[in-house]
Image 1 (tube, each protein chain N blue to C red):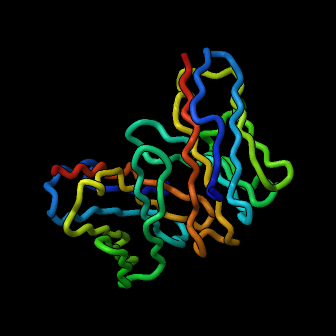
Image 2: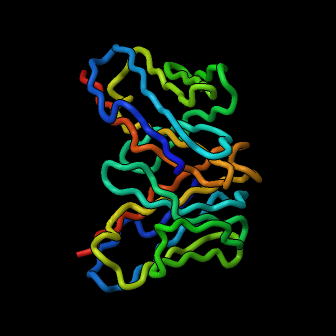
Length: 110
Length: 116
């Protein structure tokens, strides 16, 4: 059965710290891995990863995919209180389905 | 705002009633997805459309659930004879690629359903 597992499930850090969120997966016919940020409402898109070893960056956020070991990490440096959210990892499988993990709930203390 | 729009934002109803939600995708998007999200969980795939064709349905979608996208634009999700376990956030997303690998899905704000 296809699955996406995120860790940790929750994380509390102080503003300014760096965090690493993990996502491992087992899916049939992997196509892509996506990271979303969800605050109170809709998940908002962060990154789409299809190739191993190529880091994607957006400001203080970066992500990389390892297709051999079947995982991805999302890094956030110099965290701010506005980074507090649930971070969702999702994988697109060969049957066009998107499988989401349970998310990592990140709380940044001022 | 040209994002994905969902209505209503909240729906409270008694057990056994029927409910219908609407999703208006981004206008040029030909794919439309429905998800259900409960507290502490990621979104769970329910079904998706490419234009007006419903291409995939999750086993989570019991026969009380039906979705339509009659003209390939907006979509409706109906739940008949609601049960308390149907209480959740129902999210709609759309994308424009032939496969989503080319472009990510964009989500609406969801409809929060509460069954009394």
